[in-house]
Length: 159
Image 1 (cartoon, rainbow, N blue to C red):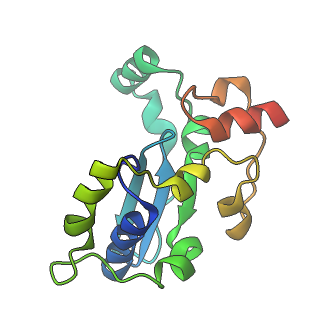
Image 2 (image 1 turned 45 degrees about the horizontal axis):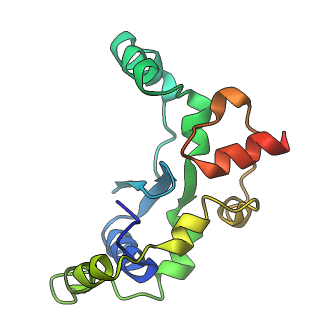
């Protein structure tokens, strides 16, 4: 899901629609303008098995793109459905009957707005989402820093 040419309200309507249909989801900020949402019908999202990065063909592809490691991939996790639920519950979900995204995305694109609230979660030196979820994030090593992920740069600087 891209955060550019959007706004926070539109992102929240999409998350509200997910929350209405899936008991659990995790949000990963992949860079400063994009996020990936993994949703499941199970009670919780299974912990990622980052060993997939060791598969020969996957490892080769990852080396050619950037230095993704299990640590850097895990550090991209922003929040889960339990953490975002109080905020998302205040928003009317996007749906066929309330097509906020259909009606608002063109306007957001025309106005060149951005979902700065979500983007700022990736650029702040204080990781509010981690604090709210009671997770502990270790300091990042230089190997875990991805050039386009400001939050990882900040964690490495603090180390």
